[in-house]
Image (tube, rainbow, N blue to C red):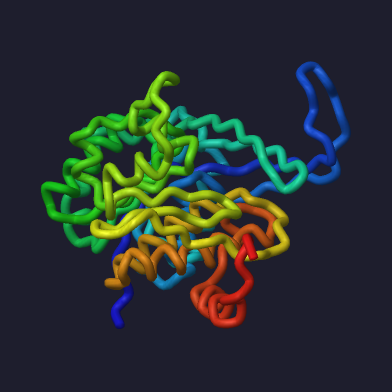
Length: 310
C-alpha cells in the first residue's frame, strides 16, 4: 500500500524541559532534578508522529534566523519529513517552549517567534502541495487567520483537514462545517463551541452536535466520539507507566491522520491513535517518545486487555 501523503501546517519549537519533584509557587525558587532539550512545536511533533507511523509527510511553517533553526529542520529531515516549505524569517527567533515536568504532568510556556510569521498570503503559493495531499493536519500555534485560510483552501480543493484546536479558542461555525475532524480535549471543547459559564451542556451533548466530526481526547480515559447513527463511543486508554505526557496529544493526532488517510473507519483510527498516544508517554520528550508503526501494532496485539480503566 502506498504511503498516505499528509501535509502538516504549524509550529516548530525547541522544547526546554526541566524536571522537578515539586511545582514552585509564585516567587519561589527551587532545585530541579534534571534538564533536557528536545525538538517540539505541535506542528513538528505531529509531522514526526505521522512519519514514524508510515506517512509521507511535508511540513509547512517558519523558523527564525538563529542556530535553533538548523536543529529543528535537521531533526525533521532525519525523520523523513520534507522541509522544502519551511521558511527562514530574518530577524526572528525560532519558537521556544519552556516545559516543567512534575509528578507525570507538565506546564508549558510557548514563545512563538517565527511561528507567527506564517501568514494567509503565504498559502496560495502552497496550493499545489495541499492539492496533492491526502490529508492536511493543523493546530493553532500559528496565527488563527492562517488556520482559517488553510482550512478554506483545503476545503475548496476537497482535501480533508484535521484541526487540533490548541491553544483553544472559539471556532466560527462556518469553519467547523469545513473541517473533516476537530480533536479537542474536554476543556478545549467547550471553548471552541463558544460556551459561556451559564451554559451547562455536557461533553456528550457537544459531541452529538457534530457526529463524525469531533473526537474528544480524555488523557487516561482515552477518546470519545459519536458516529452519525449511534451513541457516544469511548475508546478507553491503555495502562502504561507514564514518564512524560508531553506530545501525547500530538501523537494521537498524527496517528489519527495516518489511519484515516489509509481508509480506516473512524472507530479503527481512534483505537490506533489511543494506543499510539499511550506508548508515547512512556518516554521523555515529545518527539523522542513517539512510537514507530510496528511498535503500536505490536502493543495493540499484546495489550488488548490492558485498558486504563480495567
